[in-house]
Amino acid sequence: MKALVYSAVKEVTVQQAPEPSPRPDQAVLKVIGTGICGSDLSGFLGHSPRRQPPLVLGHETIGSVVHVPPGKWPFEEGDRVVVNPLQSCGECENCRQGKANICPNWKLIGMDREPGAFAEYVAVKAANVFPLREGVGNEQAVMVEPLANGVHLFNSIERHQFGTLAIYGAGTQGILMLALARLLGYREIAVVDTNPARLAVADRYGAKLKQNPLDGDSAKTIRDWTNGRGVDIGIDASGLTVVRQSLVHAVRKGGEIMLLGLHDNMSEIDFNLAIRNEIRLQGSFAFTPRDFATSKRLIENGDISIVDYTRTRPLEDGQASFDLLTGNPGDTLKIVLTP
Image (cartoon, rainbow, N blue to C red; front, side):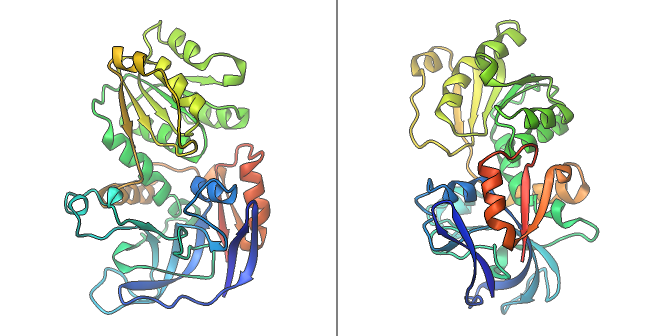
């Protein structure tokens, strides 16, 4: 079969690969489309130790079922389905408590040696396969997995005051969380990004303050915008040290910082300020099965959509697509690759 292989740092190539040999608990899908995730970009740039060449990346996928394993499943051959790519053991303490996202044995397709979905076919855990409602477009359906990350983050906020909110990063996750925040009832939202085109997208989705950090101190701008108080909640959708440092100064006393981005492994922040201001620092990783189900419902209902900023390209355009997203993406938020 045809597959897009991460073959070297900053290089992906279309190659012939063997078709999946499914394990007894796996279904096989004929891939319809797979979105390029920020974590795929991290691997492409050589920043992800768990993504090493040669590897077929890709986990934000929808497909048509071509193999159904033994057992009773909510799908059958020929169904168009979406995949929860986060595979957990189902038996550990965290899994039993509904926290499969922090299962110590979790796996993700397109990572380690688990082949991903930038290919004609992919094998996935059958328990993680869900039929899609008729009428939902492919570019919309691919967003179920990315949106689930934002659903999990908002479910992890300790105190929803529906006051002021700052989102650092206006990529896919940042814009999806802006849309989610608006859906939940937040209105006073600031978005920070260095890409003017993406700040324009944030404006379309309802951001009240759009701040380019190249134009000045973002934390000061946010504090001035909130009359010196700071925002109730700050979201790091980039993972950059400079963002984490800024957020500590941008949130109010007693505020919350939600940490989603995984770019920098180590960051130095003003912990004395965080302690004195009783700022809550909360990590948010991936999503639970419940979050995924909520995301699927929101996408199928059309409650959230970024299809106007989503582009579909063939696998043969994989190199150009990765180069665009890691270089100058403009207002493109998502590229979906098709076999």
